[in-house]
Image (tube, rainbow, N blue to C red; front, side, top):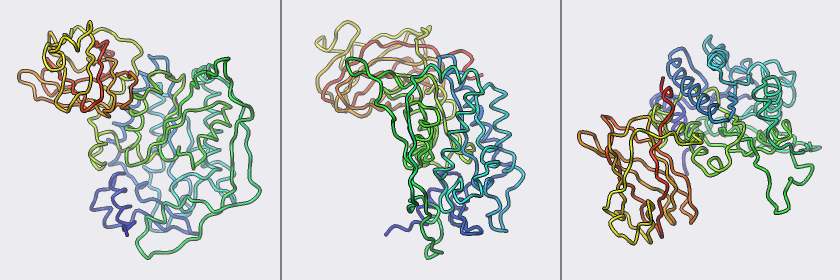
Length: 462
């Protein structure tokens, strides 16, 4: 049987504690009155630099979204340790940095014209904070249905008070949702902190919660062909946005709008979650009017390059911004660099060529097409194409050139028979690549068309 404490220590390491620290102390903390807390919420001024890196990326990302007609609302989930500080053990205090960092981050983003909706003040001042239906579970890191509804109501109030957000919300189709509150309490499955305590530690009876259900009051609107209007509103969040928390449903009820909801666990993190959504057809074909980004406050000190994540989820900060910005662009601003298909690999056979399009039957791992550039491609340049790779889940792009280290970039694909948009910058560690090879992998068929070299906004990295 897997030791859950060791698993928790590994998870804590991915969240931010060094491995040595996580091994010395269990991630779970036993507080007063049977309240449990998560050690990773503890922070101090030494975390400010990494937090500021995250703030800078969000500010630039927000500017890109706004330029492409999408309004961003950032919603940080406040620390449970701050909201319920009175239940912490005597050995742990909310220091000055923890006490004021939420406000500091909010002000920094607001000063950079990022729309931030403050949940911290709402949670601290809620009359339900010390009721028999608290805002966070005692035995879990997540908010309760009461907390989820408070968050949703606060977001609704924040949108109504912000003309830009209100305009974006009004541009989305209104739906009718109703809420049904159960007449008796049931055991909650929210008890992740119990599993973060040392083995053979204390035992806790499951918490009891009242079941809350949100349903459509009326069938969704459809035209004569059964098509529904675009939802127009997306929630990208952490595990606080997973279906079981009820947060997405609470938002549907508070906003009276349907929502595309995407919750990504802590192992991947907020940055991977956002990028995964942007490159998906759900965004590429039906970009929303408003994007609500729910981020746990504790994760703000862990930007894309945070070393304690699993390696495959760690990314260079600048390259993360280049990638998400490319995915958000709704039109191609032509680059000064031009591309030309080379008559090698799959393009060496006339039967595979049709105008500027490459279309083949089955491909193997070593098959490729090669694109040459008339000058080295720059950091702000990116490739755009439409591609089909039936049966292949990844396409590999390999950049190379004189005096430049060869790099490989992996692009995820659905692997179906449909044509999908591909966008990728090609940052090098030198003067730029002069050619790329595109490997579709083992596929049943491969098609690449409408290849362009586009240019990011010149002020993206400033």
